[in-house]
Amino acid sequence: MIWHGCSVKHCLPVICLFLVAANVRAEPDAGEVLRAARANPLGQPMVLDAQLRANGKKVPFQIAVRDGRISYIFRNPSQEILLGLGDETSTLEERKGGHAEPVSPAKYDDSVRGGLLTYEDLAMRFLYWKNPKLLGEERVGPSTAYKIEIPAPPTATEYGVVRVWVDKNTGALMKIEGYDRRGRLSKNFIVVSVQKIDGQYMLESMRVERIDPETRKVALRTYLDILGKAGRVDEPEKQILPANPANKRE
Image 1: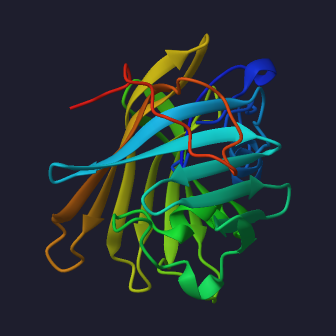
Image 2 (image 1 turned 180 degrees about the horizontal axis):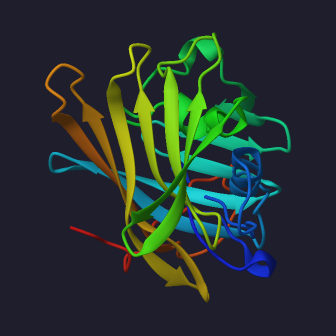
């Protein structure tokens, strides 16, 4: 999932993580803030080099923005995960061998490429859950953000409650906390840094942490890095694009 902040006229998402920006009124209710955070931000097509990084291991992939969807494109083995953000719900599909089909809800708790990110995280379904509650405002890095608590529906999900911090000025997601069904913190998503590509601010690095609910300490940590624009734009569902040699991060 990718998150970014930008003007309303030039919104461009960058994943999982997470990805959207829009104007938010001075004193909105929680539902209005979430509608801004999930507003369709898809603009000009773009392909970005990215990586998942943990314990010295890197998993390269690409993020393609096109046709009203965001694609996460992996190689070895070839895999494409397609995210669509609608007005009322999100859709998540997986393409293998040229055929795309919806991701089964039974698979939502599964890891994506063996890391901390799950299909549930990429689907961003929590942005559509009912009865969100505005808890106030807090500082997240240099930004002031609305803090919102969203109870999970009584369906299959690893979370009981999700809390999100949405930038007050841009509507961009800055931080997410997932709590288990017993109310214990289980996972953190924190924007570490942002960058400007083609005149637009977007995610540069996001930290994902698995929290031990008993000790409340970090058990596992993964980073999602956006390395820059890919060398060339092509058909991501037909061909895995070659990484730009200039986009490397140790």
